[in-house]
Image (tube, rainbow, N blue to C red; front, side, top):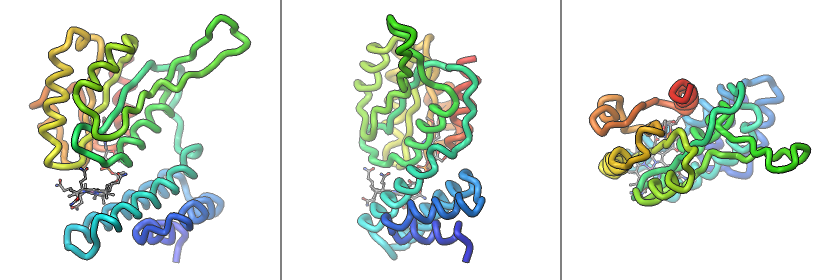
Length: 226
Ligand code: B1M
């Protein structure tokens, strides 16, 4: 059985302790980081299907998610960097009522890889510090939190909102609509994504962009701030 299949199986069965080692072995054998990542995303699809059929329950979904996170930690330094210069600051979060964070974390990671950070030279150039400026608000983020974070960071250029449940699509809608009503709206671009989200829904709620995956989200964000 291929190493990629081993990684996928370990994620499906939530073998957190094995996944990091298997991902490293797959890398050592020459598997590419995006292929390994896709294998793990595929594994989550299998987990989701099993959940839908009542073959597994929430705790099994949770351990599979933990296992995937261990694998992503190993992959982080190997995922393609599209960074050419510094793009600016971005805020990202999963909307109110929604606890899913793997996709959102991948978008944050790809944004960082594509140069969404600021270089704070401070007073002493020799002590140049790079401030990671993808502000990750986490999960279950209330509308007010998105708004107050933009106000506290007037140099923010991108606000990304993730939603994984059909039941949290209304929260995505109210988040984007609240952002749209703010004076700062003309200075930011609002991006949305998550499995149930479509381009049509993004248009309907007044987002600037929808992308289906993390890599295209980073690519799009870069275009939007160019
Ligand atoms: Co949940 N869950 N879950 N779950 N869960 C789904 C989403 C589900 C499809 C499973 C299923 O039934 N087949 C289903 C939703 C059904 C629906 O709404 N139509 C579901 C359900 C029902 C639930 C609960 C309601 C279950 C319950 O309690 N009865 C509950 C809700 C809790 C809550 O949020 N309030 C629940 C809970 C959980 C866990 C906490 C156990 C766990 C999450 C743990 C965690 O995230 N830390 C979990 C998991 C793991 C899943 C599945 C199996 C995997 C999700 C995942 O991480 N996928 C999922 C089934 C599935 O996805 N097939 C499922 C991998 C990830 C990389 O993909 O997040 O889609 P994704 O991100 C993609 C793109 O969507 C995109 O980029 C990523 C890929 O590169 N993307 C963006 C995401 N955000 C973006 C933002 C962007 C752009 C792109 O711009 C800003």
